[in-house]
Image (cartoon, rainbow, N blue to C red):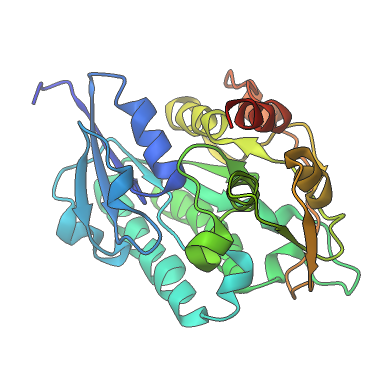
Amino acid sequence: MAPNKKIIVITGGAGFIGSNLIEKLLKSKSNKVISLDNYFSGSVKNHLPGAIYRKGHTKDIAKYIHEKPDIIYHLGEYSRVAASLHEPAVVWDLNVAGTFGVLEFWRKHKCKLVYAGSSTKFNPSRVDGTRGRDLAPYTWTKAINTELVKNYARWYGLKYATVYFYNVYGPRERAGQFNGAYGTIIETLKQSYLKNKKCSIRKPGTQTRAFTHVSDTVDGIILAGQYGQGDDYGISAKETYSLLQVAKMFGCQITMAPATKTTRSSKAFDSSKIKKLGWRQKYTLKSYIETIKKSH
């Protein structure tokens, strides 16, 4: 390995966003990219030539990563809201025990950390008064982790940037009804369209999302890694659509499913802080769906 190679560790590198991040980082020959993934939701199908893949739990990161990293991108956490209500112990193991292991590893090596927070903590309270961060075990653990990251940086003089994702879609997504409870809504609707199946939407269907392309998301993550310092780097498309609007854009026949305890709306985030680092939105959901329909 060339002496000037930058050592980059990505937790969750075999997942949807992690694999897209690795793909962009590998474009630079000066990067040595190491993925640590327990394959809870990641897949070997997402492996890319040129990256180093290690299978293991993030709470044991020191056991699997012996190199001294220049930067850690911590994406490897449990990431489904509704499903988390049914398996809080799994969420605790991955998002609390796992992330604590990563933070201790960060403290030891004194490198930079980019933490993938959850935009759910910014969602407005529901009509019943429940805050976005209190909807489910997933949302709560993600909110407290952003606070712990900030405090670790303060306590130990560490460099970090916390980024927030907004309903990411694009290549390597997982479809819910075809891949269990951990799928994403856009891929689920896409597969329903491609397979000529009915689209299932949670009532009332008017709940909105700021759907953001994975390529735009990854661009923001990398900029935060290069230049960011501190919290609140939201990476959000400026457009919002309701779930019913998206289903109609695909042209699916719609069936309505019952609302869940976590049903909520979200809005576009003020991305001005990440824009100051040079980020710009390049993709829109509308053009993405149009491309899928033209090629079908």
